[in-house]
Length: 252
Image (cartoon, rainbow, N blue to C red):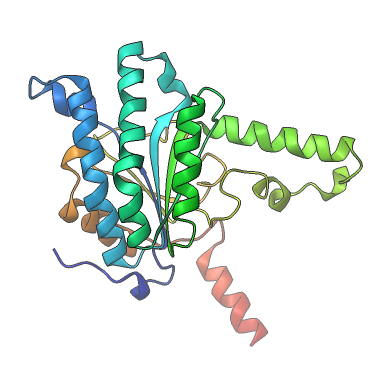
């Protein structure tokens, strides 16, 4: 399938966020264990990362492990954490060589010291990259906004900020993704149509695309179908396009 160039759109596709859903169902339908599905899902990250780069995308954000996932069976949680660490260990050198800058966002309090060291090493080794791969691990959108509110409250308490200075920009600057623009497109696989506490603040005007296939089956053709759909969207950001055009003509 031929891709639509990111540069051909009025609003180029620069930041793609993906909720990687359906690993367990993919495995169950094949008579495999849940962890086999997660393992296949990890393998699929490589292909989708390459699709993004081929398409001219600058940032890929993946919802790898939500704060709610801790409630899953302990054996599955342990296996997921092991897969996460293994991915970092196996991929970090390749990511660095290919100019991919790895960022891990989310709470790290429940990670072991060894896991935290692995994350810090990977982020340090890849910090010179020009393409951002953001992994949301032990992440929740409500947690992110709550942390931002707490940080702003502390600044007000300490006299560093007045209440009148708190606006949308101030909140955004306190989020995990302060260094990144909001996602242009959020893709969710496995046919579910919700965002499940992922980047709640950041995706206020993000275009949503729901793919019926499970994440392990989401490949090049499916990615370019999502990009093609995005290219046909009219992004208004809450503004009437006709009124916006008339306003521009009036100022000309």
